[in-house]
Each structure stands twice: as structure tokens, then as C-alpha cells.
Length: 319
Image (cartoon, rainbow, N blue to C red; front, side):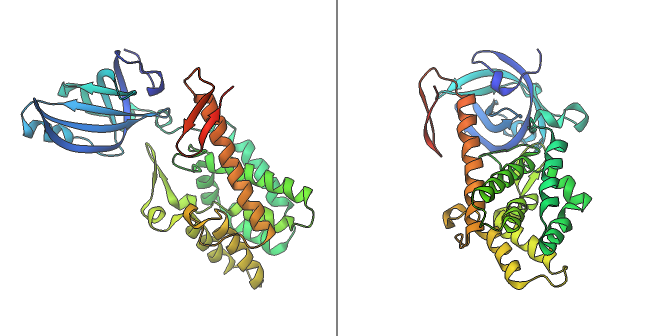
């Protein structure tokens, strides 16, 4: 059988495919023995995989412990449907095994932006070059002249699930926010373009430490406990300390833009935007994420109905 991606699975078919292990649930009893569940994923979707074992608790324990979260496993099983969701079932211990690193392509599991990363980065550097305030330019250069930072910035996703959740997603999102903010500065010339662009370019840099990318996109311990908003502000303040003569008020305004770009406390913002450039960054950030969600939902809708529904944004008109 040829390798297939989850999005192409159909109920009733036999599959032989590889999956990244998102998580697994410990073995538990059922009528005929012991079973355990795995949440498997590839770059297209996630799916639940259930192994139905016999009454040998030791055998199922050995099989369960033969792989871990983050590993890639090869599965041969049957696709079924439960509560309108596809799932995979198998009962042969020979049909589940951990793969070596040489046996899989990481890009089968972590999606990649469809846009050209180098072209996007070149556009972003043009915006950086257009900042003509010496202190803000020095701050931007302290990040974007660092090869290690640049490599990480190009590879980091913008989120785990909501928008631009793929390699190159952070760069793609940052460029979009920067373009929107630049347009707003043209419409409203009383905005400080230098300040607005600096905030737009730096607003999500904390995601370099918030997310880890292996066979899946996951949140780091620091990301879970602090979040990219606070992490990013600290990264900026650490760089500012190294720039001689950096104005105190400018430092505070840039820190404020980092802390307020999510706007609401329940969205992860310690502060609400308190000046025009911070407002521009918040709404540019929000509109790019929202438009991505609406466009993606419409493109991926598997229905002939006029509407679909999403738990985060509600009804979406598809026609």
C-alpha cells in the first residue's frame, strides 16, 4: 500500500502510513483485554489510533512503552468512523512500530509555508532598512544581524493551531502585520512610522522560545509558564540594555507594544494599547490572524452547505 496522508483517508480502507505521536493514553481494560489510544498526526491533520490487545497486560505494556510522544510510528490498520470522526483501529502488535530517523521525512509531519521564505525575508529586511531612527534601527539590527536568530525566525511557526501554524509561519505573519501597519501609517501620517514598524517587526519574537518544532509543533515549558508576550518583551529589554543612550520613554513605548499587542487580558495581554502605534499593531496582528482563519476554513470546508461553523469564530459563509 502507498503512503497516504490523513486528509485523504476514507472510512473502511486499509492504510499503511507513518504518524507523529502527539500523545498517547495509558492502557485500560475493555471486554476482550487491554487497549490504548494514540493521537497521531501528519502535516495535514490529526487522527486517533486505537490498538485493541488481548488479555496479556505485560504484552500490551511492552508495546505501549516501545515508543514515546514525539516519535514517528508506522501503522497498518483499518480506518473507521466514530461520532463523524475518522479513526484507525488495529489489533496486531506487528502492525505498530517506532521508525528510525532515517525512515521518514520531517516535512511529512510539520507543514511548511507555501511562500518563498527567502523572498519574504528579503521584503522584511527592506522594511527594517527603512527605519531611520538610529535607536530603533540599532534595536532591530541587534536581532536581524544575528545569523542564529535569523535561522530560528525563518523556521518558527506563528501558532500551534490558530493561524500560520507551519514552518515559516512567524516570518509570513510578521511580514503581513508589518505591511498592514505600514499601510496604516500612510493613511494616518501622524503615526510614528518608525515606532509602528519596529513594534510590528518585533511583536511576536517571543515565539522563538514559546514553540518547539520536532515532528510536531509544541509549546515549550517557558512558553506555557510565561508566554510569548512576556518572553518577547524581555528579549527586547535585554537588547536595549546593550544600546548606549537608548531613550527611556522610547524603551517603555516599545516594551508596551510588546505587552499590549493582544489587547485583552484573556487573550494574553498584560496591558491594553495606550497609544496609537500600539493600537495599530494590535489590529494589524488581529486582522491577519482572523483573515487567515476565515480563508482557511472556506478552503478546507468539506460540505455543500452555504455555511460552516467553527468554535472560535462561529458561522462562516462559504459561497
